[in-house]
Length: 199
Length: 189
Length: 122
Image 1 (cartoon, rainbow over the protein chains, first blue to last red):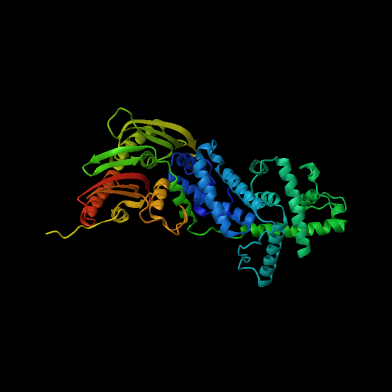
Image 2 (image 1 turned 30 degrees about the horizontal axis):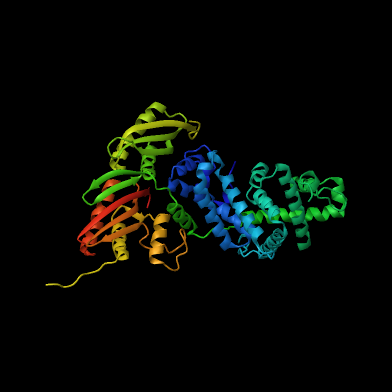
């Protein structure tokens, strides 16, 4: 299982991509479980970006996403003794984060805020026209994502952005891989439709 | 509620399954119907735009605030267990004690100095009935493939023993080393 | 000649201990525990503190002092820099804090207990 290299510090990503290497997740989890805060800090540095990114995109609010990210890691620290498969930390963090975000969304008033995340421009190398177009397209996707149900959005983000497997997503959302497949198909269809009207 | 799974199939007005069209768009091979049908054409244009926007979303930099790691670690440190301390000195001013977890950090640090060795789990415990600071060390290590296990363990004992006494201040009366894993070395070692 | 009595309150004794301990080479930070934080909060009812992990921990978190008559006893939880000899760093912190409490705080006798809670890189 590879780590999405785009979202992690390069050095940490290199360590983590070698699941058997000396600085593997398994090593860090084993150490952290004994109370080694330095080992835990390595895991925080390795995974805080993807967890924060997921939380921002699920919640649409950077302040709440920061709080969730902090809660996820403090919860993980408390519950480290429960992890039996040391290599499974990544998927476990995603599970805590997803469920925390879904709970927040359920308890929210029906009116969901739009994303307050700054929308980055496309790469500076592109022409101004291409950049404007990419910007518009990204905005269209954000608006469309906001119209999905929270579960669909979680499913779609975990698969298409975080690149988790169907089995991992199913275990995070406590459902079956078939159901994940179904939700994903539905989410893609809805998003695709929204993208047509934007063009 | 619809039953999830097969029943969730999402059909276009022409009857085509959107999931199948998505697969075809992904591999870039539309079938005859999809190439002719206006519904499929519109939907596949949407899918192409979605794929591009998804790539942009995935690549967009979205970094947490710089101080988030420190905030998390501060919270984590206050939550650390503080039940086991090893007495390492007691003078006229008062006792000095080291948390068993802090002693374990020193042990791991020492073991890591051995070439081809990575410390995993480690515990340090004051031996009951023994003088203050006399401890049992239990250490699990992973070795790089190709490393001589017996020699490495001897070296670990030596380094851990010295670090325990000089850096941590306790007496390692018992050092238990278990090799729990082997990791592949670089370049087919 | 009776010049009166100097009164040093507990928070001041804690502050002297905290600053002196932090000033010791090899001591990298104090280590507040949740229960110590709770105790120090209820005693001083600090306002504006937003919980562990947030900014603005009380500067003496990790230190607990008790004054009894002219004597003081403090307990200091701290972290030592990895690679430095813990016993030496802890003993130095202990000695410095005791001296500071008698010299700056005016206590007759200072007992100092050191808890090394963590060993870490700077």
